Length: 208
Image (cartoon, rainbow, N blue to C red; front, side, top):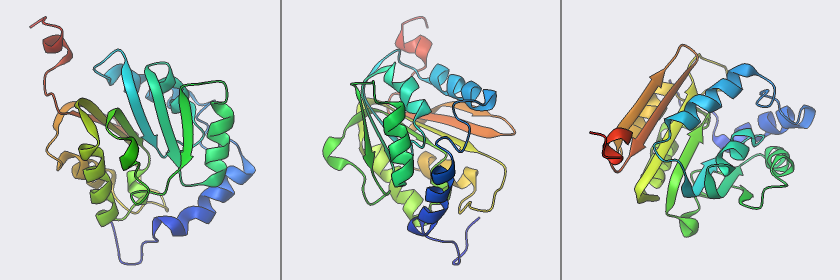
């Protein structure tokens, strides 16, 4: 779902700054059961109990960042909206293992801080055009540790600011050659997880 008239990510900056200018949590990440439940589904899908390093681009108000901090030794979160970054920093101010940066992706990908054990990309890819999304997927795959995990979770219904269909976003991640180990599809969102190690959790623990 793209066209040559689709705005570039930077062109959407006023839209996001306006959202966060009027509300510290414009998507209700801290109040809606839908968002809390979706986070719980994502966290339950992770194949490891704990991770050393995680990167969460497009962190928004930082609610998932807080949840990831409980499972990770160090979390780098980022957003391209200055107001979203400010909101996430306020939300994570008491967490010594979290750093929130200003990144516009894919250009500002933190190559110098890779590799990561966990990369979580939620509600971000469909704001990019197809070439930028492919670049983002390639950066993710190249920045994983040998036992690294890549997670994507995205809203499925259409909306005005969308540049790519959710299936196209997840298709870009799938094309990296990583092994998909989780697919959870609902009418509202699609959650998928890819690993370098294709073994299931039971196989990793020697149960089968």
